[in-house]
Image (cartoon, rainbow, N blue to C red; front, side, top):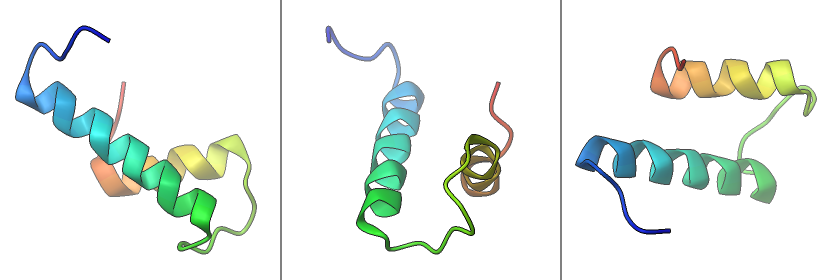
Length: 50
């Protein structure tokens, strides 16, 4: 990885990585681990993503 073009890009990437670690550790209760539920969780945490 060569680096990030902006601080916002780095911030959003790290937020996503940390969120996936939280899910993997079981620190958040999900009804099931389906893709739509993960998308919904990310949208709630970070707002609408394109």
